[in-house]
Amino acid sequence: MAEESTENEMAEESTGKERKGRKEVAARNAMPTQEPQVRVRNFNEVATGYTWEQALSEAGRCLQCKKKPCSNGCPVGVDIPGFIEFMQKGDFLGAAKKIKESNNLPAICGRVCPQEGQCEKLCTLGKKHEPVAVGRLERFAADFERRAGTEIPALPKSLNKKVAVVGSGPSGLTVAADLTRMGYRVTVFEALHMPGGVLVYGIPEFRLPKEIVRAEIDYIKQLGAEVMVDSVIGKIQSVDELLADGFEAVYIGSGAGLPTFMNIPGENLSGVYSANEFLTRTNLMKAYLFPDYDTPIKVGNRVAVMGGGNVAMDSARCSLRLGAAEVHIVYRRSEHEMPARREEVEHAIEEGVHLDLLCSPIRIIGNKDGWVEALECVRYELGEPDESGRRSPIQIKGSEFIMPMDTVIMAIGNSPNPLIAQTTPDLKTGRHGVLVADPETGATTKKGVYAGGDIVTGAATVISAMGAGKIAAASIDRYLRGAE
Image 1 (tube, rainbow, N blue to C red):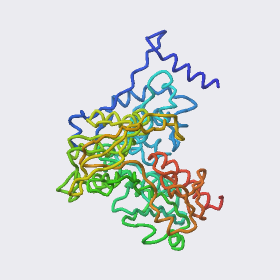
Image 2 (image 1 turned 90 degrees about the vertical axis):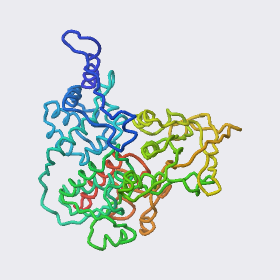
Image 3 (image 1 turned 180 degrees about the vertical axis):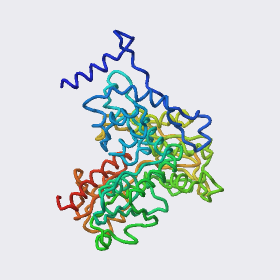
Image 4 (image 1 turned 60 degrees about the horizontal axis):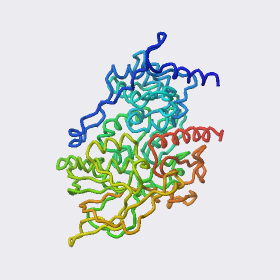
């Protein structure tokens, strides 16, 4: 308690005007970005990153707390004051090396991790001021290392034990990196033609450039992991066949890529997309570079996106960049209840996305040619909080109205593809088809098989999937050593 009080006092004493030699706390360094009117017409990264001066200035705001409350909020346990201390000294390579003791995907996490609800939320400085911009510093250190040349750490002698990882998203990549660094022979099986999972098919180029993902995956390959693309487990081999083929453990991190629809009339009309299809065509298959990449995608003048999460924001912002004149987010709660990161909502509004709140469609109306023509919607008011803590929407009688639309994108959630569960009878599944796994170990109901990320939790964040991967990697190591 004494140390915690001291840290609170440090934050308290750093307020206001100069007083007895103490200087006021420097303001948090804003992230430089492209101007909204410029970026809305390109797919280049919106946030351009700190300069050296900004990185040093922001690192200098860290109080170097002994208890490291920020690290307690990190799902993968990064020593945050530790890497920032290197940055305070100008040793950016040392900072990157420190981060990679716990996190093998720092350039990705520095861009898409919701730090504001995790490490930054617990920052001592944030009790009285704006917290240290941990994610922005992590991104700077990782980008600096990539430009300077990534150093591969010393690896242990091979244990000659094989582990299969199903899925090359954030969870699978984390398991692969951690186990490879322990001496295991890891093979990653990816269903698509490019590794990265949701990092490449789901997150737009302007938030997470493919070059960044490719560099992080190349690092994991250099650690010794083998990545096999176009490999659909459940089709080319089952989990049981992997175990019979010499793999002593299997990790399932195949995510939640099965789209959810609203089951309202008109969802089969032309011009209705799932966010999965829309974003996969746009991001992974590079529809935004048509005709150089022959992946056309039809976006009308008026686009409606159902949902209020990050996927909805990504779909809306891609629609603008693909030429839509008007894009609407249709969400049945208020802006306060939106699960999307606040930064993403603000960027979407800056770029011209309209928020149609407290309303939802009950019917999609088509024209004589079978294309979307309009939405019939109803309005809501908010009642008492539901199980998630958000206030439940209550439909207002007689509130029906029509919204003319050309394109509708459903971004209301996803569930796991049932293929692996269907081809592996010993795996127990739960609600919405998620795999049942022990949250403390990642162990499933089948011996030697572990799982984590969205296939266990349903759609969640990149960093939570990585956290599950680290837990499972440690458990697999114990299991293969006979300690679990």
